[in-house]
Length: 288
Ligand SMILES: NC(=O)c1ccc[n+]([C@@H]2O[C@H](COP(=O)([O-])OP(=O)(O)OC[C@H]3O[C@@H](n4cnc5c(N)ncnc54)[C@H](OP(=O)(O)O)[C@@H]3O)[C@@H](O)[C@H]2O)c1
Image 1 (tube, protein in one colour):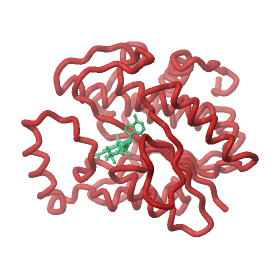
Image 2 (cartoon, rainbow, N blue to C red):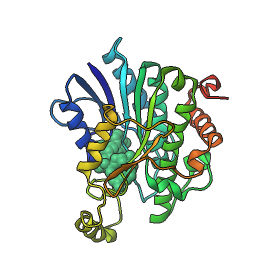
Image 3 (cartoon, helix red, strand yellow):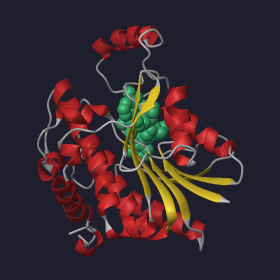
Image 4 (cartoon, rainbow, N blue to C red):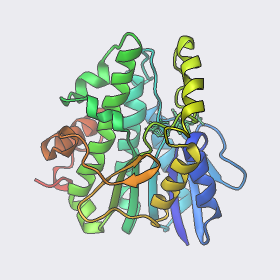
């Protein structure tokens, strides 16, 4: 029996992936979410905008798992918020939700990962827009306007990629032989990620959805199927690659941005995230 733990399985392409994982033979899926997943999916409450909720979810999950190890951890949930807001912990919401919550969950669940476990973190190709690492600045920024909100999203997605990289560099990652992928579905217009966009952009979304098949943009069905394949280990990264990108509906393994390939940036982000969520920086865990 394979045990898969997932976030972001209630909407968008994550919901498609969750159903496919559920249908796989000898597989148990445990979902962390704000609301119940589809029928048959075991769901535990998780609001990633709250670090206390992440800790409660992890506690409940560990109790439920008992001695069972996690074979696959899929950190897929994400938000895109054009308007500025703060979490109860005082962090900018996009950064806190997309980076800090997943980082904390990863750190708590690391000791529960099976040897050779799969870890998939959903990132975005928008990460290429960010040229300089600034975790403390991103955690406390106040962004004004749609484009600034999109930059906040892109920087949080760069963090997802760097966290995946840091995990492959870590002693634990190496010792356990973790199979780590940072996955981007590419622009996938038929999900609910854009639900917070301003009203005036909504007609544009409708047009993009219409032309999506013609210009071969990703669909939730395909992006979800690919995520399920990664989660189930049906698709594995080629040697030395961690960035999986759907491009024109084909899975590719390109280089991410130069900053996303920086070992120094990966280590700096890992340590800054540790300080912000209140866990040890654990220098022994990250390759010196
Ligand atoms: N769509 C794209 O073009 C695109 C491109 C690149 C990367 N991505 C990334 O792909 C992932 C999935 O996105 P999607 O397009 O499928 O978007 P979506 O339809 O909005 O789904 C997002 C998922 O994250 C969950 N989530 C959001 N905030 C949460 C919170 N505070 N606590 C717990 N769960 C939360 C949502 O739960 P609810 O059901 O409760 O809302 C939902 O299950 C995200 O990480 C996104 O950044 C998307």
